[in-house]
Length: 362
Image (cartoon, rainbow, N blue to C red; front, side, top):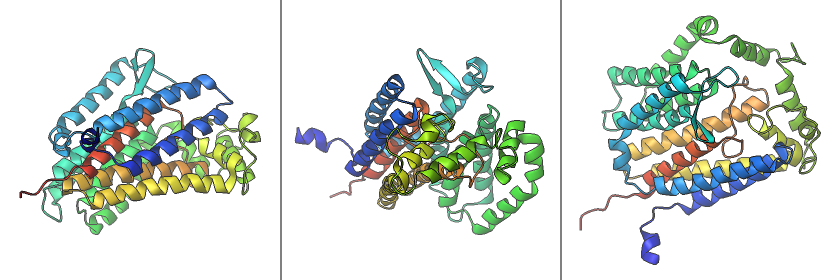
């Protein structure tokens, strides 16, 4: 039995912190869904399946992920194409592929495929990385983001962009290039606003700058979110006692705005505990990146963990009005099987990259 466990690649710190976070997520989801038992049971199935997948994914040697990174990216893009052709249209968007009684958001795989592919492409390049390597990487990121953006899914497109740009930055991108890219983004903002953004996306951004312009329409979500969080105080109103949540003033309580539910019912201390768990997970990932066996593993761990952090930060800033509402779930807490499973796969890859060591010859 001991030999069996010695052969399993496993990180107890990540496993138990993710177990605690996922369990709290089910606990919060029960209140946010107005005690919808069937929804929580379905989410529990995804959590159990996610832990099994995470353990399975963490066992292969990192070289397997490196050698198959190109195939993985092609598969993710093909699945995205299948979604365009055969995926059902839900609320004006084609994002899901039906798998029997379940549906899977195909763009979730690109959050994993893009950073792994770029890490494989850049890990053995000389520092600083050359202009042609930067341009190729940016083209890959742009193409993947554009296809997802056209679904339309701005939130997922932003996360995919972050996942690729983080790897590019960690690979040795110069600060002058970063500054120039930021200036170019500002110059091209009129084109992005008038050509690329959908009308509802422009409305969300306009609402962000002037939330009082339409308090009973476009601004309703963010105003109710602020009221819910602010009314929680230090200790909160109590589990299942949040008026904004239970009286259905707060929208999307199971997905985008579940953090507002937590703030209202558990107050500042509950929010502090939740964020502390997230910070512990991120610190553990950074430790695994620093102690990883080679540059490829460090790039993958760094890219995936920073993407996880970006997902978290965007959701938190969104629900308190510091960023426009872009449809971003709270990791391991919000309802959704696709995002949850992709997160478990990401952490399985992180564990694989952080626990496999190359043995030195005797």
